[in-house]
Image 1 (cartoon, rainbow, N blue to C red):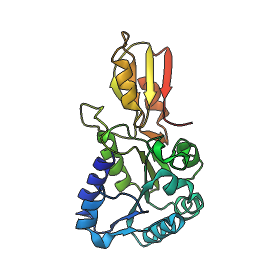
Image 2 (cartoon, helix red, strand yellow; image 1 turned 30 degrees about the vertical axis):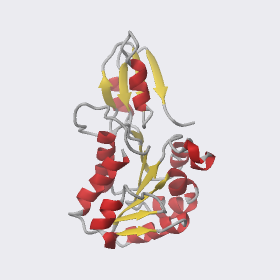
Image 3 (spheres, rainbow, N blue to C red; image 1 turned 135 degrees about the horizontal axis):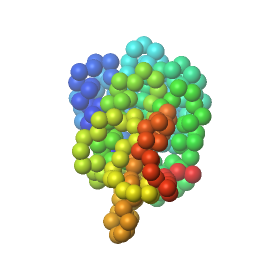
Image 4 (cartoon, rainbow, N blue to C red; image 1 turned 135 degrees about the vertical axis):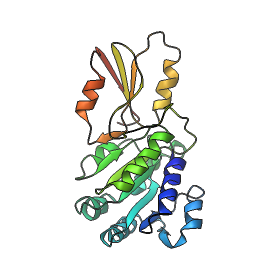
Length: 240
C-alpha cells in the first residue's frame, strides 16, 4: 500500500511545484524515486520528530503542500504536542503518512506497535483519519490528502498487500462494499482486511463485507444505508 501511495505523490509532484515531502530517518527504498526526481523538495529530518513536525508546519504556513512520512509511533506518538499545536489547531493542510499499522513492525518490539493511534488521532481537532485496506484505497487516500484543505492522517502497513477491490474506487470518503450478502455484515479497515477475506473463503454463509477507509469523519448515513436488512454486525480492526 505504501508504494501505491508514494507513487501517487510522485505523479502529483510533477505538476505541483509546491509539494514537499519530509521523512524522519525512514522510507529508504520506497522514497528513492521521489528523492531522485525532486531533491529540492525533500528532506530527511533524522531522529528529531518534534522538529520534523514543526518544520512541516512552517512549510505549510508558507503555502507548501507537505507530506510527512514515518513509522506511526514517530509521526504521531512522540511528536503529539507538535501535531496538536502546530498542525491541527492551525488547520494546516498537511498529510501525516504513518507506516506500520497494527503490529506490522512487531519484530522491532512495543516501541513500534501502532494499536492506539486511531484513539489518539481522534482526540485531535480538524484531523481526517484514513485507514486504507489495499493499494487501490491507498491511492485514493493519497489523492484525497493532496486536495484536502485540512490535516490528514493516513495509516498503512508496509508493502506487498494484495488487491481487495476488483474495480476502481469512486469515493474514498464512503464505506465501500466488497461483496454483498444477507443478514450478516462484516466491517473492517486497514490491512487486516485481507485476513477477513481469507477467513471467509471457507465459510458457507456469505456475509456483506464492507471496508471503511475513512474513520474520521465517519459517513454514518452511507453506512446505515449499506447495512439495511442486516441483523448481525461484526467489526474487525487492528487496533485496541
